[in-house]
Amino acid sequence: MEGPNNQDFGPEDLLQLADSVGGFSLMTYDFSGPQNPGPSAPLKWIQYSLTTLLPAKGSASQVHSHMIFLGINFYGNDFLLSKGGGGGSITGRDFIHLLEKYKPSLQWDDKSSEHFFIYSDKGVRHAVFYPTL
Image (tube, rainbow, N blue to C red; front, side):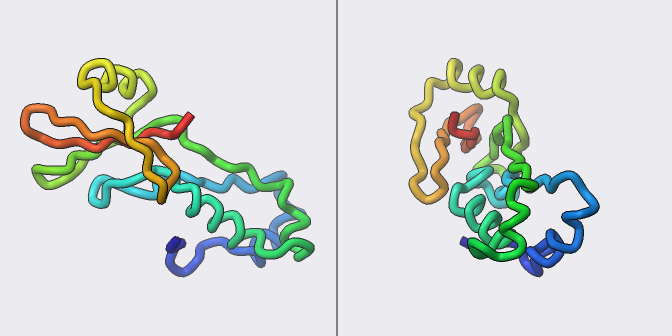
């Protein structure tokens, strides 16, 4: 799984700052966006992010693993698949409303380990990704 280009924060940074902060918040969501619809937090991407920051057992940065706060999403995304793309974030209430209104079939994406569904509204196809609970 591809990671961020030119890693912004790595093990060396963690070591350098560990004595000056109480912890590090690792954002593990918003992998996809409106111009590239897909899962919000693919499991392999989360694992990649963690192993990049904390490379090897016994390494100096691994000692500080207790300082990593894993940021997870409690919202989903409703992406437009036609008419030029786009879309945005949805809350749990929005997610339930879409399930009740369109009664779509939830699908499991093995690659990302996330659920999603497809629905159409007024001729526009949507893909909805929401954290698997």
